Every structure is written in structure tokens, then in C-alpha cells.
Length: 286
Image (cartoon, rainbow, N blue to C red; front, top):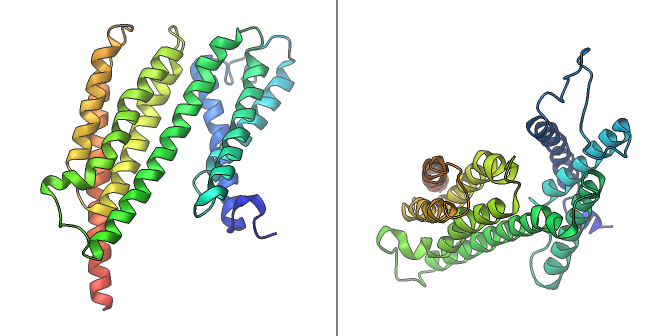
């Protein structure tokens, strides 16, 4: 069937799913090592694995199920890099189905490892961050589509030209910066564990903020050119988080300011260079 795997490009979907699955397993190894130092190859013979928190599950079975579930979760994340549909009802339904599949996979792992934890705490620690990150990804896609529409209108001469410092072109990304740099870290800090803040202390500053900040800046720069106000919006949003986080947390978050500035700035600059290079190449081809 043409719509198998929810994508027209089935070969591309398989490749991205397998790549995501491998990365998911790699992240699972990293997560296990960070949350349980010494558990990875930590026995006297270098063969002691501790990948499961539930003592009622045999260690070998818990490890095997953990690897399998994280492979599935990574594969589903890899598939999210492809468009589900061009738009309309199919896009909404397939997106909901994909989010449901990721939620089921996540809860299977949660139930495997945290059987004795109260359900409200599990929802705050896992379901809420997953939902917020999924919303962030969708908001990023919407901003990208909006930028493409604005780019098309500019080519057709339907706009009044470029605005000073490209504030009009950057405006849709201001909300994205607020979600990425203020809402997401706030929720991760409030929902995460206080003794080992994996979500807000490791995942967000070392993976989520730099990767998403760079990619969003690159996307904006590639479509609209260099936009210096976007990195500034990221810094302002992170500053608000740093200030408000002091009311309920004693962690040092000052390093986030540099990350929020450098990665979106580098992404925007690289995207703008790619935009100039593509235009120059098209001019020469003509």
C-alpha cells in the first residue's frame, strides 16, 4: 500500500526509523550510566548490567525489555522527522496516532521501572514533559510553514519589503523561543527529581536547548536570512527562567544564557550563509 508506515517514502521512513532506534538505544545506555553510575560494565568481571529499577523483574528480562522499548521510542522519534501528510484531517489524525504510539511506548517503560511510584507523580515526571516537547516540535513545524508562506509572499511582491532587523520575519519565532527557553525548562525543573535532575540538569542544557536552538536558528536563517533578534529572544526567555527558577530551585543555571545565545546565533548565521550560497548557485545556473 502506498500509505504504509504513514509515509509515501517508505524506504526513507525505514532508514530514519532504524537510525532513530539505534540512537534511542545509545541514549538508554547514557541514561543508565548517568542515573546509576558504575552500573555499566561495573562488576568485578566488567559484566554487571543494571538497567532496570524494578527489583521484581529479573535483571536480564528488564534489560532486554528496556533496550527493546528504547529502540521503539527512538524509531518513533526518527519517524517524526518526516511529514505525516501535506495537511488537513490526515495530518491531524496521523500526528495523534504517532503521539499515542510514543505515549504507549513510554508508559510501558515507566511501568517496567517505576511500579511502586504514585500515578500523579509519574504523570508529572514523564507524560507532561513528553507532551510539552511534542508541542514544541509541532510549534517549530508551524513556525517553519509560516516562514515558507512569508517567503513565498515576499517573492511574489505581496509584502512591504524587509523590516528593520527583520523583526517582522522573526516575530512568529518569538513564541517558539518563549516555549523552548522558558516554558520547557520550567516544566522540566518542576516535574523532575530534585536529587538527580536528569531532565532539567542533563537532558535540557546538554541536548534539547543546544540542538533545538541551533536547528530553529538554522531554519529561520535559511528561509529569511540572518535574524539577530531571534537569539536575543532566546536569551531573554532563558533569563526569565533563570530568575524565576531561583524561587523554587537552588541550581546554577547561568550557563544556559551562553547556550541560548551561541547555538541559535550560530544556526541563524549558518542558515543565512546557506541561503546566500543557494541563491548564488541559482544565479550562476541561469
